Length: 376
Image (cartoon, rainbow, N blue to C red; front, side, top):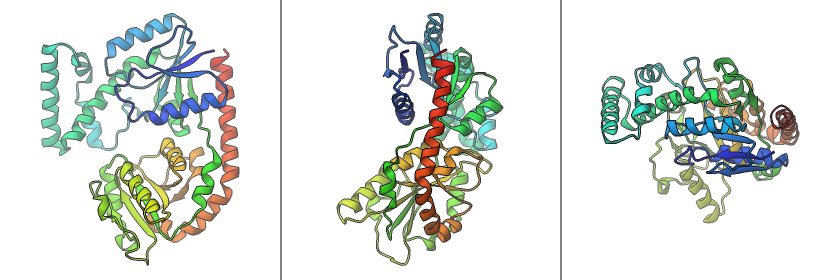
């Protein structure tokens, strides 16, 4: 049995690297041959793709039908949460309304065609840019993202029925698809987690960096604005802050620092203080939902936190998940600050058994997948 992950439907790998890494690790752990390819080989039996069919849709429709006729089993790896409208990641009523007024079918038809079609495409997107700015007060970059998301959602609806299996790498995502998606054969595969990071997070420090990255929704921004800044040594929720302005040990009364910025800036800060001043910064990666009633955790964020020697912390209430056992969970920032030290010690003490149980479940899930999909 030969398995391949085709990535040529993605113009850029930014945003899917975590999924490539995780799915490769799952198969390698179970001694199943798995290659990441740009061209499908003749010997492949099971072909995986990560959702993205905008560029160009007709080409992939033809290719997928060809693979299916050859008897290749097609598996789609899902990365986004879908709602009852078959839209992904809607974070406000304004988002939903704007998504519904976009003629995504027409945009897909016009996208990357000849010169005349391109003129019509850009005219339409220009109208949406003006409309989104004037009536919704979205900034232009976010409007462009929303237009592309509408095209992505529509392309997904056109292609989803071609796949034999739909793969989820999160139990929350699995349950979401089961409830909102009309396709069968939805399969849950779970990460494997190496316990080597535990020693690195055991090291305590009198400087603790609480950081966030990712999409800055209005809800997230408002939640952060309401936090009492006096409880933090550094408090930066402006993504554009200058790294040179970040300093430690100015006010030794507070051990906590909070930053909402790009990941590369956070890495630079930690590296700078470790290499130049030999200061170990204890890292906490904070998760706040993107909208008020958003019920799901990000499994990829949690795994990436652990691999970066950070403690993942969820703020708020979420649906039950196997992944919440890998995190610290608090209702509010005040609760985090008040109970962090005690909860941290309990968390680190219990991690070895939690990871053993988690990985045992990962084994069971893969064995079921192997029996029902690979060996069938």
